[in-house]
Length: 168
Image 1 (cartoon, rainbow, N blue to C red):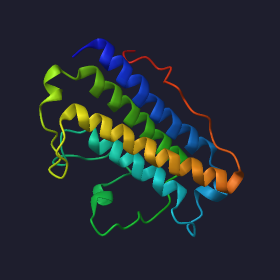
Image 2 (cartoon, rainbow, N blue to C red):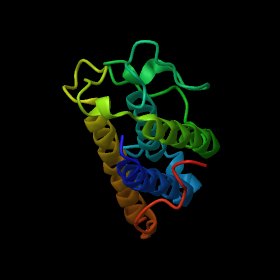
Image 3 (cartoon, rainbow, N blue to C red):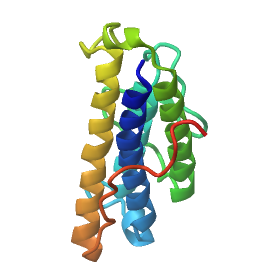
Image 4 (cartoon, rainbow, N blue to C red):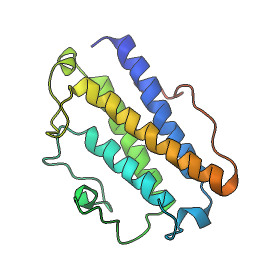
């Protein structure tokens, strides 16, 4: 696959992940752990990271998020985790997801444009799945920024492109 395409895709996907990280870091503790708010800030962040990880996988078969997370987020009943995940736990998951994203983009081959992704509920190629995943991250990051604006009248600034190189 063309290295220029990979670099451009990483710069934008990486920027979406950077913006998610900035929102997580900007969240004050009282908003982070407020279980009475709907949606719960920490949960939106967790959901975003879980699906970032899942959608960077070949399929749901064999998918296993890193500890302390489980596949419970895929339960169709929509149950929330039993406890609030800490910022540090979610930052660790973000670092994991960022690395997985870089490896995925770096290793993509030309056939990714035509090979179907492994998620039966999505009729997308592997390459289109990558863009779908990036849109999902940005969608929920926008929700988090809105929650921050509503709660503390401030939100992190736009990230034009990530400063992290694709390879390195």
